Image (tube, rainbow, N blue to C red; front, side, top):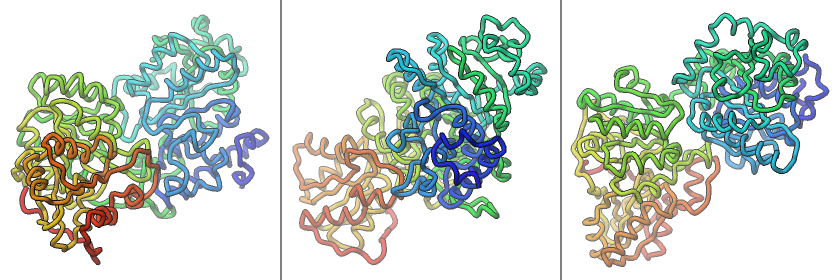
Amino acid sequence: MVLHKVNQPQDLKPLSMSELLQLAEELRSEIIRVCAQNGGHLASSLGAVELIVALHRVFNSPRDRLLFDVGHQAYAHKILTGRKEVFHTIRQEGGISGFTKVSESEHDAITVGHASTSLANALGMAIARDTLGEDYHIVALIGDGALTGGMALAALNVIGERKPRLIIILNDNEMSISENVGALNRYFREYQTKKWVQETQKWGRQVLEGISPRLFNLVDRAKEAAKLMLHQENPFYAWGIRYVGPVDGHDLPGLIHILEQIKELDGPTLLHAVTRKGKGYGVAEEDPIYWHGPPGFNPENPTKVSKGYTWSAAFGDAVTELAYLEPRLFVITPAMREGSGLVRYSQTHPERYLDTGICEDVAATTAAGMALRGLKPVLAIYSTFMQRAYDQIIHDIAIENLPVVFAVDRAGIVGGDGATHNGVFDIAYLRTIPNVQIAAPKDALELRAMLKKALELGGPIAIRYPRDNVEKAPEGAWPEIEWGRWEVLKEGQQAYILAFGKTLRYALEAAGSSPQVGVVNARFLKPLDREMLERLALGGYKLVTTEDHQKMGGFGSAVLEALNEMGLKPEIRVLGLPDRFFEHGSIPRMHREAGIDAEAIRAALAEMGVEIPAPAEPHHPKAQTC
């Protein structure tokens, strides 16, 4: 065992090459073992093992700053930087994060969970280093489709203009979560088939040993040796960024040698390393999409595990059927085909499907362009990623009240992915925008009703739903829904719980069979059902609002504002997430900690003098109608 010798990056320095190669295999085994136990980002981390071992052999973390784009490819980095003994806690309550996190380790240069941020961070660090007269290396490892993101491309533009000393490693595995899309990705694929590029992949240490670093400079690109590495056809030539590669991203000796050479060069250098996602684990290599982030599995007999019927699947089924009814429907995703449940749709309606890559802003404005010319675009997007398109929602969609439907997936606390992925801000930032409407269905049938009605109504409409399983709705069912009207699921004599979205289950559980407490499916936040709200307030009922969202600016805030405008002052408690970030862990535990679960609802009612016994079993009466 070599891994037991390594507790910090400096422990790699005295290891022989054979030991380093063995270390890479042991890292893979440990990543597989822990992901089998906890779930996690398996395929991405397996594909980056040699790159990470080479980086820690050549550079000196934490003095040298190693940046990992997205961060889910950094599992080997975590093991090698003092977290080997706690690696088994990754993504678990009280354990280490599944992404790099500055507050977790001095070796984590950036906190990251969203793609395409590493290059701008690296640029800022390089400017800070040079401004303060310091001397250390900065290396950004970008991959899994992150280079297709607009933020990464914009950063390249500035890097090429300013030319700071830094290294960019493109971990090119042809994938993000799904296959990469876009012209740049297509160029890389065509680029690698060229004869001269294939020849460059054959050169190794013997070639580089005879090349002075001076030959890497752009001014010498006319020379034969430099031509192989700095060919004017390379996609980074226009940016003025030195290009080296493509090289084998799993050739550990070759990677170490090349990094030793290019770290001495001035200005920005990009090393193009071709890797295989899931490397070293057969099933992950064969199906890197499923094994990108699998749940727990048996490492000796790995098989796919059904995650159940999810809200994402319910959305995907609904839009696939709706596309037959509405020929102008067009679905857009920013690189989340699998996650958003759109595999079937993309195969059934390929002519009305667009993947923009990791470019949420482009996805939103493209939807605006479609809407301006008669289409009815549906943008399937995670709540946490929609934050990156905020300006476009206002500037390009809402001002002209364009008919764009936002299918807001992963709304609320999401669990293992933690603070960077929790979808707990969308209500607050959407409901302040004029023309934007917001709704949350209680089940898959109501989701279908809302989607169909939203396409009929027009205007920007956000329909949000959680990361969770849901009962499948009957195929072909399209119930009518009265837009803007809440739904009483249970009558009450003394109090009502107004529940928006996922916390409806807690409201029903808290109310149980008590005749004192009623439950309202407050499925429309904007517009609110002011008529029902007024009726409840004038009726003397005590009210509790619940939501899986920040309390500030959320559903409860909207209810309080409406009551204030109507001059009504019922006794009310607002339950929502407190003013802090929630880390990774189990969703029920975080809901309990936040004070939005059934027990918290019963406690709020008790404060107002409404006592109800805790039910032995959760009570889930069916809705009256849509």
